[in-house]
Length: 315
Ligand SMILES: *[C@@H]1O[C@H](CO)[C@@H](O)[C@H](O)[C@H]1NC(C)=O
Ligand SMILES: *[C@@H]1O[C@H](CO)[C@@H](O)[C@H](O)[C@H]1NC(C)=O
Image (cartoon, rainbow, N blue to C red; front, side):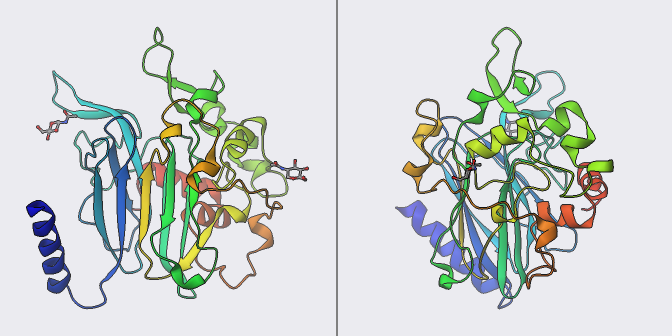
């Protein structure tokens, strides 16, 4: 209780000590997995960074993060992390940011990793967010608006609550050790095979030619609300009125720990089967100027943006 009180006091003082209007919303990050995860945060160029770029979150723990006005960037969870006994360097089997420390300090997740992508106050007084499996998958994740969001836009939970590691094809699996064989992440076909038809590059660099693949459909069927490949339908993007708080939960349902993996409805994410709407068809819409990062990548030229993401040049 005392701890809670001091936390609350601390929060109040933090709020009071900042210029008015700077705090836009709170992201409450919760680890519902049966194991420790190490969330990583990458802020986009030109937005105020968060207080942290990486931290540990034990099973059952939550951490509120204050997120500045108009923030954009991505969050993910690193798993199976340790300090090397010889070098002392920190690294993770999935989602590693290569910094050698718990802080990611401006480095992004190495794929495969499930990504939460945000553009707060993107356009028209709306926040844009999505969960992306375009760079592969490492664990179940849910983004849900903490408050009603004024009933504006498509302000509902999105994510991937299913354990795709279980159903990951053998040629996409990431395993901790060959002998053990247990999948800890599932690569995207683009990363695994580096082919234009999977990466939506070259002749496949537009939504008319780059179609869902056998591999992206495995992701899409498991998690219909998440982006499964670069030109996935625009219905994977969600919006809330700016100022809403968000809950980001890793392993949102206990069922996503291992068994009964196929029951997203139980956690309040209904399976949806929207008509495919390619981004190219909606660019003239009112919200076109600002999009979540996946969508930005699609519109501005996937190769260039993804390359810069990988190189960390955008940040
Ligand atoms: C790695 O070492 C740092 C610094 O000593 C420590 O804070 C952190 O908890 C360690 N992480 C792990 C996974 O052991
Ligand atoms: C969506 O529904 C239509 C009509 O019921 C069906 O033909 C299609 O296969 C479904 N798509 C997915 C991805 O489930």
